[in-house]
Image 1 (tube, rainbow, N blue to C red):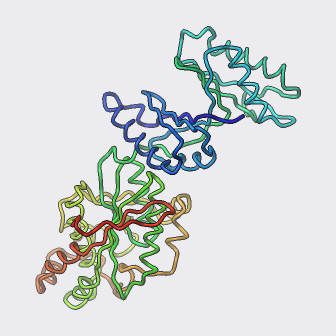
Image 2 (image 1 turned 60 degrees about the horizontal axis):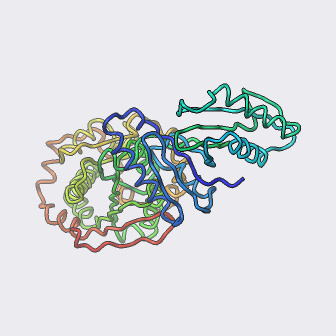
Image 3 (image 1 turned 180 degrees about the horizontal axis):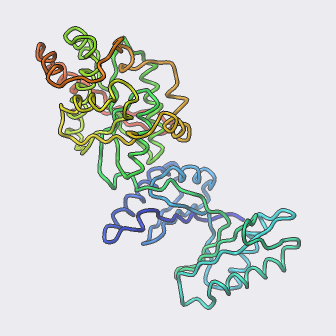
Length: 401
């Protein structure tokens, strides 16, 4: 049987009161953007459900995309019929029969939000269970672990029948919690941090620091590919590529070696904060995990954070590397992150970086040189790219800055 729509169920959004419509609108926008390559679909949203009308589009491809959209608790490919028992029985038999294989078991799961319907849930279970047993020879009942679970949901506008419930990504829809800037390196951690922040409803724009000729075009391509993976969540992502060579060379020349990593992070944070301000973001996201490397000790974070009052969000702060790698594998960024192309965070790593840097010391070292013109130049010359999944990138002109 050919499904004609997909029924989407909300997750945490269901706990919202007066603000629920705002979250529903955000989810509808995310779904529409992610499914923009399917021109025939139509999206309808109600207080407790959203419906993707397929109009002949490929349900399998759409299912794979919906799995990655935040704000969806679960969804089911379904057919819609009228509140007519004979029509419902015909659709139920056709749907279950199309899936039945010899020896299969089944159960009926009925839901009745329209209490005026002539049968209650027990009545629906009994009537349709008997109808399938009578018309599909060999079919047996198993209410615990059935091969076929026929869902029948009776609503005022009609009845929805489905045999599949697919788990969604959960969380909140993109943009429902505001915008933040993700400091995106080519490593394993930052894409995972971005993914987890998006799960909480943040719209993210990524900032990557590029230091040619010390970092190659391959390292830039690597970050673009990581951004494409994150773009799958709601159809696109903005990537800012910052030319960082001059700033990084000045740090090497002016700051003692064991403090260069601290200064590098401070200036990255300064530049990201300036881009955030221009793009009207409200926070900065990093992939830091406490104690994982020298720049991620509590003392280092305290010293690095001094350069901004903007909230710094660290979704991975209490996670170990094994947990982070597991999520990277699940969101399909691990293989890309493991490509052997260094970014600017790894090319000038000192032999003995300071693990407990002091604010007064790093301020003193940085005071011997005027970094401000280099920072302003880096912001001005930042390249901004709109990334879409598995498509060519589209450059926005520098007039944005």
